[in-house]
Image (tube, rainbow, N blue to C red; front, side, top):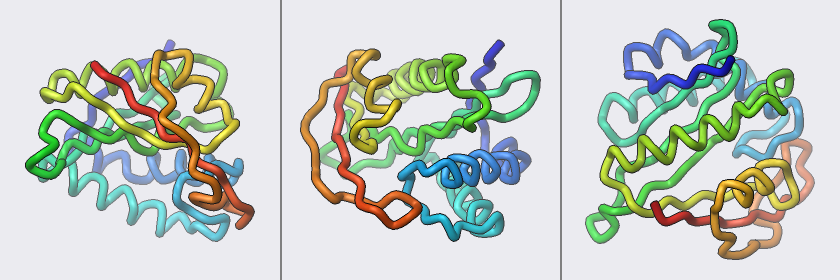
Length: 171
């Protein structure tokens, strides 16, 4: 059974190592999630320390997925937006370890991300993902609208080019 928790800054600090392990697994698996194959455990932990600082400031929401008390996935909602976009949030870094994929973890995280966004007063969500991957199919199944594709927007961890799809969803 998959349990989704919204992590406070205190809890986030306790799980920095486990969150970093999720990120490392995804990068090792070839996911285009802003990091290259050379990502170290220390750098992955540093990234999540900054995420937790954002949670502390109230700039983002951090969700984590657990199976049998093991952290297997995460997603963030970036809620700090410019003054003319108080209704909007960005969904970022939907990450699920390879061993937990195909069990509905990503869908559960996204359901909770949408719910947490509504609770934060957001009515429009935006995200981007690698073109042609399982995440793209997940977002389409969950009713997200595809805005378009940006060629060569980013790279995969192995330094090959990655086209990126932009999605939005009205809540």
